[in-house]
Amino acid sequence: MNVFYVGSAINLASLYMAAGLGASLSVKSGQINLGGEGQVYAGGFIAAALLAGLPKLPSLFALPLAFAAAFAFSGLLAFFCAFLKIKKNADYLFTSFITSAAVIPFVDGLISGPFRSKSDNLLATAFIPQKFRLLRILKPSPLNISLFFTLALCLAFFFILYRTSYGRRLQVFGISPFFARYSGYKNDSLFYSSSFISGGMHGLCGALAISGTYFACHSGFYGGMGWNSLSAALIARSNPLLLIPSSLGLAFLTTYANKAALYNNFGFDVSALIQALVLLLIAFPYKFPASKGGAK
Image (cartoon, rainbow, N blue to C red):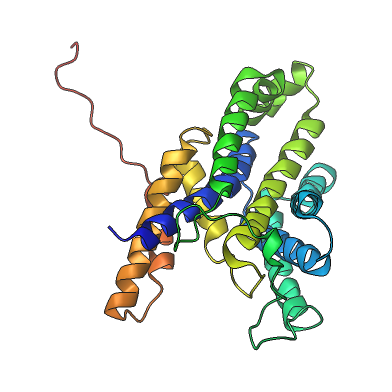
């Protein structure tokens, strides 16, 4: 068993868990956040720009600051879509996708322009200092200590959704907004908060990818993260604990498919094909036929 590919798959799964929690929360609120790709990209860029621009700041302060800024910026992108839904009755599915489509070329322009690294020929921001890079735990793979952080977040989100009044209100709101309103729930607050956290978790995924895996925000690093995280969330039925095995399954599938494509010189994007196939299977779930041994 190749340690590099195993570690790479687990590391990718930890990123899917972070963004998948955001997707799960959005689904629980009765909406689907399709802006994950742009939110991951924006969060990664914010984190990379801050960490590269504050080299003298202690890592104890710089990393939380970068993570919080990435969370807040991407959270506001989703919050804006929720605002359009509530105030203008705009379709949240559509606006989240369009916002992401607008953010991606904007960040591309920043990376290729004023924020491009001056020390190399990469289409990327400057590399973050060594002291800001998360500790690796399975060399030579990129697997790092962010895995424990994302696992803890899965446990925390499970507790919030199923053991707190906020989680119960959010689930009722997601199932029936009319019933939630007649029950005295503040629907607008539930929608705003869930949207902000959903976008924020995607931004946090981008920040973790920068600080633990890539160490610079290069153009297109987000590719597939948003969609695969959404797929993992849908497979897990938005359950934060079930998100762990679903993320691992998708990550191993993607990693080893890319390995096969590399070794066999395939001329097409295997990851995109897998992503489309998984989403297709989710869209058309198989229903087992009723047992013939039941009561007549």
